[in-house]
Length: 435
Image 1 (cartoon, rainbow, N blue to C red):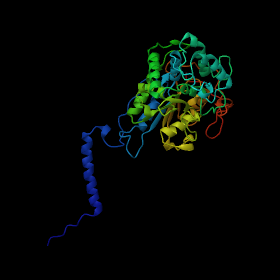
Image 2 (cartoon, helix red, strand yellow):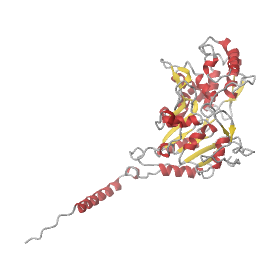
Image 3 (cartoon, one colour):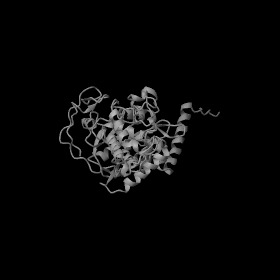
Image 4 (cartoon, rainbow, N blue to C red):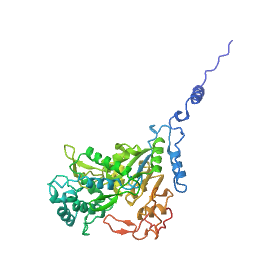
């Protein structure tokens, strides 16, 4: 009599299947490059170039190695987000300034169509409105471009440049009043507002012309704007271009957030292969035929046309939450849970403080001697801050300590006060040490 052979249990059948699958996977892995092995497997990550201060390169490399994945789009894990400020962070000098100078030299700023300069910014003071009208209105009819690049338009160019560059008239009267110092900078906003009447494509054309001039000019070049001498050159930082490229290759979702006009930053961002849909700049509202108005798009609880929430300090947080993470309404103005924030951020100014603080893994600061930013970076209360000198023409060390404990922070109403940590404690004064 033949002894019956016991049927394998369900557990044993599953073990046999698993063993077969393991053998097949091993054979497949032997024929597939490591970077394609399996979703989530670690790849060979891009290696950063040199030119960084201290151990900053090593810390940035560790960030890349930690967050890089072979398949960053897998459902189980979203792309890690990296956000860069633009002016004096990715490039040396300011592309907004470069555009303003080009507009003035080429007569592309229009006299307000209403004939009233207060329509260009709700924050212009009566003194500024009168000064602009006196210098500019006799030169063109309402709505027409002002000839600010001609000898006849020199006084007008000088007045516009004074209001934009010094927030005062040529006689020294304050040019702006009544703004929230943590959500808008009226002079930055005014540049966008002065593009009223042009289309986005036309402004991109102006920015492209300014970009070509400023990249072609030698380092240190100046230009004549009205009767003034202004900076005439811009350069991309090689190290930041390399970092952005490495982050992208490693699977990061790389964004630019800037308080320069949207079309202007779009043009410049192409130089580091960041596309327009990953640029957050100051955005104008438009007429039905696509012409810019003098009003700006809003964020969070601030609606379009209120002109009160641009990508500036707390406004940068709002715009990043809204555009990158899809948060709508007042919630976009708040600090989000760690899983809904950027892992890396880079900036150079107090205008970048809030979105830098929101970064969960590492925050890169280029030292331009800005009080609140350097107070927080040097305090480094959570160990996630790194400071690097500017890559071109770095600043000299600040001779006095940063006034962190007294006046390093500027409140919503413009009142100075102490810089405080998240727990409310005051940051002590800090000595400049990276330059």
